[in-house]
Image (cartoon, rainbow, N blue to C red; front, side, top):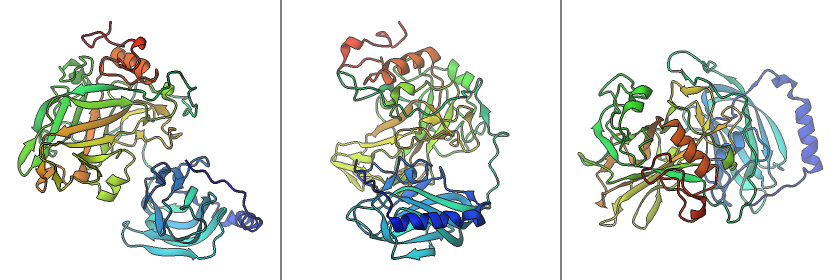
Length: 461
């Protein structure tokens, strides 16, 4: 990854010091942007994501492609009065840019504009309001792209502080506390570690059922149609106890987890994945030795049925999008797939847990994505990163192919963990912590001397 680090010019440094001296008027303002959802017009080789400019770390950055214009925006979650913006540029900075606000992410109002910026650390006094704040760059100061270590937005939000308890919160017992996100880089090994994962191969267990025990618990028929995999008993009334008592369509008997996703339709005809589907359990963090097994009953939703194409394309879990035949990295279902091919999607889940809640009212807030390979401080517990790799037997003209939730970019899925704790712990330790590329037995065919976590019946020996 390209890294440009240069000292501030005397002029930029003086400007930064003067700005710092005049910050007392904003002492009461709140940092509103840190950890908030972010999008960008592009990323530099996919290695410098937008969220890295809002993580509070000066060792990560957003970097754009080497072209004008480019933009990066943050969703503050509610309308806010914006009074100050701080920018910490890498050496690849913007000479000309605007700070813009928007109520809806579509119509933008400029609250700051310059054509003579010199990079470095900038503190900008602004006056505006909006839910979304965007930096819109029109002229780069170097031949590289735009590169920001931090983009901080200060002001006063209309949102009330989120509750930490009450209806919709399910607590882990016991909670996992005292964890500091690991920044360790595991030492090199010979042979080298290239993967840290195992597979859960699961077939369809229930079809075309309008139930969702996470989003609509106890309300049969309240959701759009879902295709279920894994546990064979999953329905609107599902609980951890019912899953633990249920049978499974997964190859590994100890995996009684409920997995489900919107049903794929060709016109009005449901299309079901054929045969065992690949559900990876991976490390989402650089320090794969720090990954812990899921706690029993952890549940969450990955993705959003109301997502726009742009949001799906920029989603931290949209690892490859849709593909069929030679058509790859589509952010909606392709218009045509070569006859005889399959429609595939790969989509990754968050893998950092707050250590406290098994579920939250939005079914997402207790989970977070790593930022450049490290869990954020408020979600410090690294857990396995699930990656769905689904394949549907549909090809040819795809004009009428869609999900029960909508267009292809509405794809999402749900996970309700009910693994046998000993089996999950064995696979996590042997395969993820051990740096192996395992099948459902916990066996790495490229490193056969390491053995397997489970026996030939996919059970603990």
